[in-house]
Image 1 (cartoon, one colour):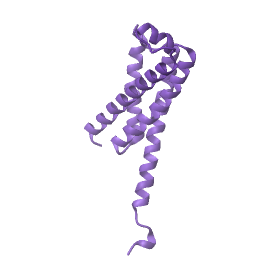
Image 2: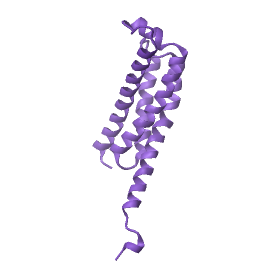
Image 3: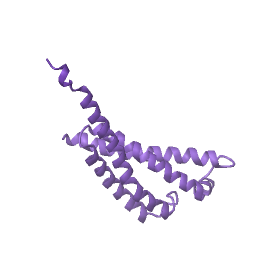
Image 4: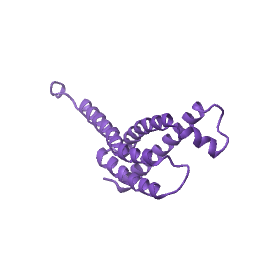
Length: 148
C-alpha cells in the first residue's frame, strides 16, 4: 500500500465531501429563499429551517457515499480501510466543530446526525467501489474455455 496514495485518497475524500456539502447547501438555501440571501443572517434564517436541515442531512449522506466511492477509486486497493481512515479524520473535524462557537455551523442536532451518518455512508461508497473493482477484475480474467 502506497502511503502517499493513501494520504491523498483520505484527504481528497474529505475535501470532496466538504465541497459537495457546501455546494448543495448553498444551492438549497438559494432555491428555498424568498429572495437571494444577501448577508449571513438572511442565509442562516433560511438554512436553519427544519425542512432545509433535514434535506441537508439527506444530501450529506449521499455526498458522503459519493466521497467514499471517489476516495476508494483513488486508493485502488483496501477501499473500505481507506474509507474508515477518512471517517476517522472527519470525526476529529466534527469533534472540533462541536466545541466551536461558529454561527455558520448547523445546529448541534444536525452535527450529531452528520457524525453518525458519515462513517457508514463513506464505507458504503467505498464498498460499492470495491465490489465494482472485483467485478472488473473477474471480467478481465479469461474463462476456462477460453484458455489455450
